[in-house]
Amino acid sequence: MQNLIIRGGRRLGGDVSIHGAKNSVLPLICSTVLLNGKSILHNCPALTDVYAALDILESLGIEWSMSGSDIEIISKHPENFEISEELMLKMRSSVMFLGAILSRTGRAVISAPGGCRLGPRPIDIHISALKKLGAVMRESGGRLIFEALNGLVGTEIVLDFPSVGATENIIMAGALASGVTVIYNAAREPEIKDLTDFLIKCGADISGGGTDTVVIRGVNRLDCAEHTVIPDRIEAATYMAAAAATGGNITLKSVIPNHFNAVSEVLRESGCEINCSDNEAIISAPSRLDAVKAVKTRVYPGFPTDAGPMILSALSTARGTSVISESIFENRFGFTDELSRFGARVMVFGKVAVVDGVNSLSAAQCNCTDLRGGAALIIAALTANGESTVGNLCHIMRGYQDLSKNLRMLGADITEM
Ligand code: EPZ
Image 1 (cartoon, rainbow, N blue to C red):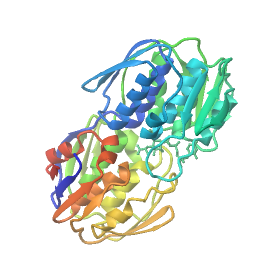
Image 2: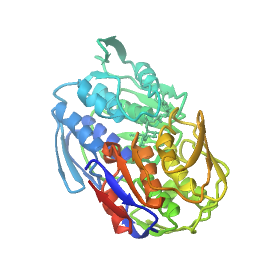
Image 3: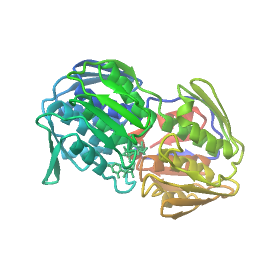
């Protein structure tokens, strides 16, 4: 599938079931390097980033199989401790294998990770934390070589920034370290607690997962467990933005509404009605949204950076001018040049986007530049009058399972070429 052909201007309606969270299943897969025996992860999404993580597991000598949304992983002591440059470049999240491999084997070799073009994606916080746990790092030929031949030793770590990946890396590194590791200013995203819940089932001694202070008491051995991946709050936000943009009315099933409260609040401010139960959210949008004067992306539980592009796209036809301030990534708005092809009026000043709502968008040909920017372009095409083409779908395949199929079931006129 290379392109989507979308004939826009149709209201979305119906039910959509949300898949397991990409940003949870990836660290969960990394963490199985620490374990022994057969784990089963349920509710896993079929995404290219997931397959990339499983390829890395395989390169470490750890066997896996996937049936439907279940992934079975047979953990044992890894046969090696190096991740090839080719596998590292497939996705940024590969850096999250670092803590688990180092903690399990005492050595790890990686290279600079790949990932979305959201701006510089350094891993200095990861490296600094692992050094505090006793790792020694040297660079050679573009590779980062870590050693902790006497094992990692727990310590207190204060994160300069509550990095999601670094928090997850430290948790995995501390799980088999000697002594106690305490992370202050830890990331609080729900995916962190999903990881600690799984590791605790496997025998880890961890408290505070999902809060800003996580305490990991190292143990000698971790076994294995069954676990169901939490729903993807960003996939949910994507369908909500699509409904908002098209004046639609959709029900999201298999969600945890509390995980996207900040997104719901912004959509309510734009004029949408959102009603939630334990595991469902119903969004009903007006024929035209009101502008939202100030959307500010923040770390969790604030408005998530990953939902910014899709909400921006929905607000491009709102009544009035909206302002979206990004606080996490340098180039979150890199997709707006492509969005302007639809007639959207967006001015970007560094990490601030000013969106002058237009009466309607017109069909265009565009190409995805990154995962969430690509989802924003698809939402613009669903809104625009006429036939649009969206290319470079490899970005979409990284983070959305069955997006075009689900949108078709919600009434969109969308075909894959
Ligand atoms: C995770 O990325 C998510 N990815 C991202 O989702 C998400 O946007 C991000 O968290 C923020 O919520 C996964 O969970 C797989 P960070 P991560 O470390 O861990 C800077 C998506 O679309 N930083 O919290 O890489 C970094 O440059 C993806 O699903 C350092 O400076 O995010 C960025 O500006 C995109 N040094 C900020 O922190 C470091 O060592 C956030 O990074 C690490 C990060």
